Image 1 (spheres, rainbow, N blue to C red):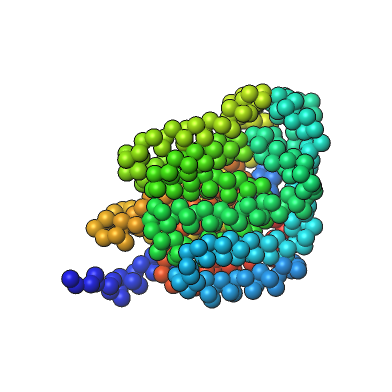
Image 2: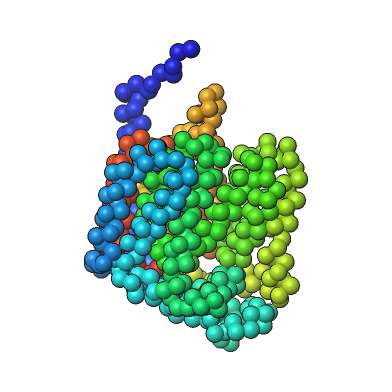
Length: 457
């Protein structure tokens, strides 16, 4: 049997040029969003961000995290691809988690411990502002919807009103067990958020094969999104939703009732952490489609999946919180504030520029290759079939992000809000050759963003 022919040099060069075109187009999108955004903000001041399209302000600086961030970046670029390819799988996963944590923490500490981690979740918009209003948790849940609108008495801060109460309850429970204050809350988000890359790797391995998961690992670790993973609560939300997807993938590939129930439980929790994360259902649907043989062979998997999915909604409903009523009130609250003023015509495409900044130019090139895989779908070899399966998973995440964008409920601040979708776009980088060059671009972007801008989250 003859070995498959390698692509010719002209074909390789053509593919590389197209990757660079895709990265260049993404860079132009960001440039346009910055220039046009600054003009709009300078004339009408309707964007409510100081450095559009990001909620940030210009402020070049260094900090105690700078040397560590440089060391993590250089080490990952130099050794990440080789370690990803050679380490035993059970060693690779904890190493990926630990390195992701080091990357997130070092970037956050460029702003110092107080501003970079301890202070983030204590500002007037954040969850820790209302800890004392949850002394009686059942009463607070029954009364939750009465404080969502801006003109309601003692209205909730923006982030509390903007999310179902499981988000706030997380920090209330941390406080109850003695982990009080912004430092503990921030490190909870960093620690949990860093596990999202492990969940994505587990999912890729069981659905598309270990080889692609290993190639994706360095990109998931060294993601520019780490700038906002430390310490945004959305990093925690991203981890919960990512593990819900990962456990679903394990359930359908291993025909496991236990994993199905655990996945359903986390999907239910995901919906009560953020209203917008109901769109993770599109990624879950892709997992079910890719694992349809497991469902056919053991349809009983749907029973624990649905039972687990019902647990959190049932508990909150019995406690007196109405998810649908709260969501409709939130839509009204959203239009009462900056969301009702921010121009949809700018943010509907500038949000995508934010996505470029959190996923990097490598992901833009990877998405081009994802499209190429889907347009020329081939399953005649195991490698081709695996690439198609990964491309379908990435495409589902991109679809979820685009639906969120078109909804008009994500105008601005998507550099943190879309973290749960961004982690599923990064695996597109597994299709790229020359990983060290692309990883260098990813690291440079994150370092420049964190050193040149004072980010709002």
